[in-house]
Length: 119
Image 1: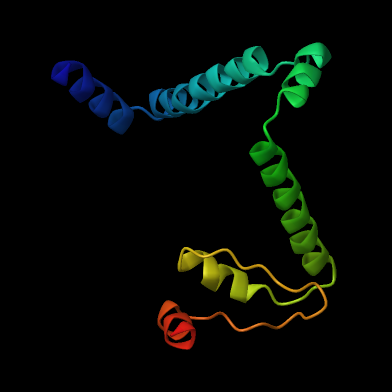
Image 2: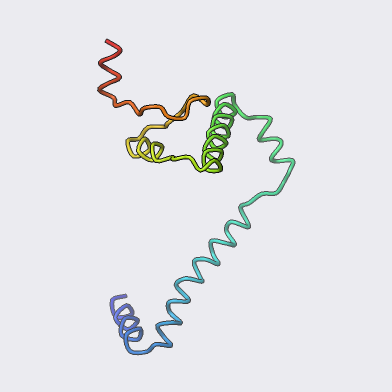
């Protein structure tokens, strides 16, 4: 395997056509495999989809509703061109920033501040 790798390195260094061919193969082959795997695993079976929706647990339905609301809120903020940096700050801290829909600016509380106020 080491001999093959050294040969590929030498060929890509010495030959531009080989380099571009190898780079194309490295990009196109995984892309094609990924595309066809997605096409094969993407089910457009409406009967299966309706069956999965009927069997959904309450937790799954609730999470779908919450995610839809949060996405709608975020997209609305983007359309209104509001500053969303506080969301990124909360995400970096491992938190999810939820807001009162009528109040845009809400402070991001630190865990130590919330502990001291609850005592």
